Length: 68
Image (cartoon, rainbow, N blue to C red; front, side):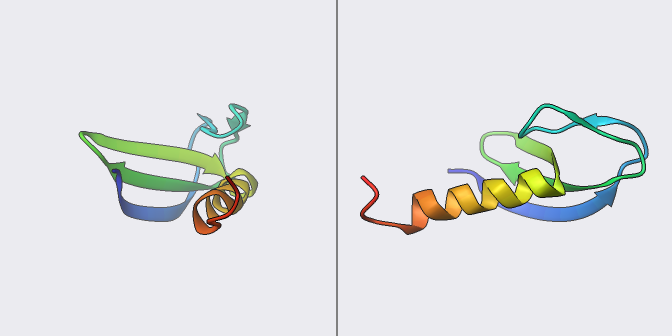
């Protein structure tokens, strides 16, 4: 299981690609950068809106016992 190491709000100095929606994160925009460790280190970059949607989806999937 992956271990969450950190989450930061970062202002982009250059364009990046959102790991959730695959659209560009424009330079100078704020985005969420999270780092995890499983067998290797993984860093994700997401628009703030995409990060919130992922948080909600994960919460629904993993915090509710009677979904399945």
